[in-house]
Amino acid sequence: MKDSSKIAIILVPGIILFLYVLFLLNPTTRPVAKWTLGENHPVEILTLIIALAGGIFGLSLAWRARKLEETNFVVVFYAAFSVILLIIGMEEVAWGQQFFGFGTPAAWHAYNVQGETTLHNLSGVHGHTEILRLVFGLGGLVGVWFSFYPYFRKIASPTILFPWFVIIALHAGVDVYNDYIPLGKQFDYHVQRTSELIELLIVISAFLYIALKSKMFSFTLKPSASSGER
Image 1 (cartoon, rainbow, N blue to C red):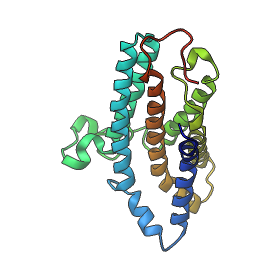
Image 2: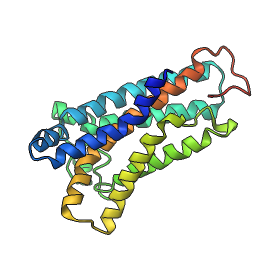
Image 3: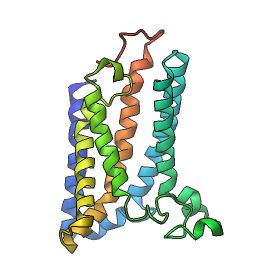
């Protein structure tokens, strides 16, 4: 990978978040920024597209790993990661309900706070998805730590994604903290607004993870015990 590409990957999440906060603070650009973060608007649709693309790409990676006779642990990890990514994408549009307008089954409607066919709006989960974002961010950081151990390198997070996971974990951590110790209405407003943006960063980082890990298998005919990402 070229140095310019590495620098871009490292800087992009910080730049995106900084610009959005700037646009939300500026009265002139605030309406446009808020519109892009709305339901079924650009950020959410982009999250859907990247999540679905990453999930499909990830399943093909899991299949490739299986064909190369990787361990069941590696294959199952990539497959599970990809399925979760597909679920995230479909949750963004209520499993198609946002587009096709079909009704929510009565049994499901009774337990869904927004009356949608979604998992993240179920009673007890709704309003606490920042915990899931925090788990993803911390999980990514643990994955980076795993990259220094040969046994885990086949599933470890590339170190170049470290800034992505730091930003995701910090934002989600502040969001969780704000739930218990309020930091002010204005602060809460911006945290809630940018949470949609963090979800986009999550699926982009997941897509990049799959793309970068796929290089491990691109030119491998037969994996060896010493093979791994460098």
